[in-house]
Image (cartoon, rainbow, N blue to C red; front, side, top):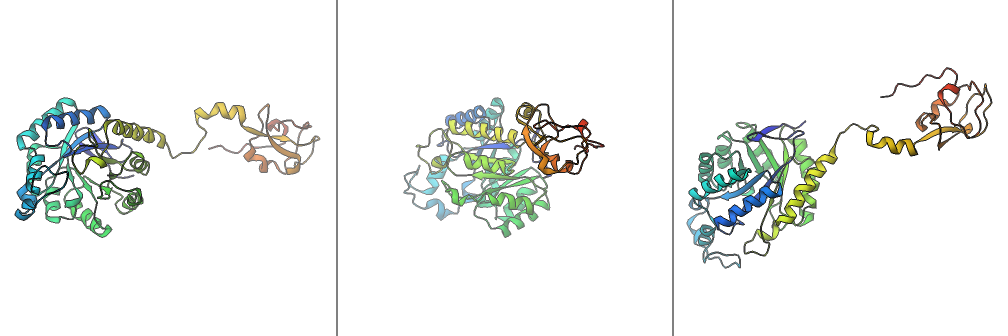
Length: 359
């Protein structure tokens, strides 16, 4: 059974706990605090467990030339990449305001710390867990410092090799046991053939003592639901209020009607996963009583006859006789009384028949 731990106060993940669903708002708020709050409310109303943003301290994440690089994309909010990113970056006070709003709404609030200084701020803010974006998963100094903070961690694995993920696991595990790894492919939007859900199963084999999850950038909801059926204990999907808005992430995001359907489908699949014990269920009794078959006499069987298989057949019969799976056990048994053709074969007609113990 995979390890379970408390990801947020009062909310366990892993083992048989419900899948933890993260609504990744990221920077789809367009740099507008009112839109960000509206998206937090949308995440809550759709049934998400957590609303998540992305926090950067730009001079720590980018060097000077990267910030000064001209940015001519149709998604640009400024002439340089630095101007673009500054437009989308909330201040510390704005983050405190968003956190307070999430508390009022009743949804967990966190962010991906996109650099070490951002992690320091989020730690000070008191987020319940750190999300490590794929771009920092192989940033081992960042990963070491973040894991040593003592907060639970959710680590995406886009753009990484399995060997790197083994090293990530060992590095984080040495100082923090409360973490999970998400299968992720960093493409926006993500084509189905590049999803590779089988990596979830491989992670479960390689890292059996931590929960495994899925972070998806595909269109639609089907693949994420399939990930949950494969055992994903945390899922993350980008959300938007409008896919046509300016911004590179919107097309790979789910609008409210899609996100609410995703949550509904995940909870339905979790319910359907049920038990690994195969048995006749109470809901099947009516069908079994109506259509369940029994062993009957193919021909008239005189008293004292020794049963052979060519004397017997299987039909829906009244009254109920031996179940079909016991027909081979009847071979060689002696009949105490005559059994008419087409009559059910019952225990009282068989000499010294010992009913097998049923499990």
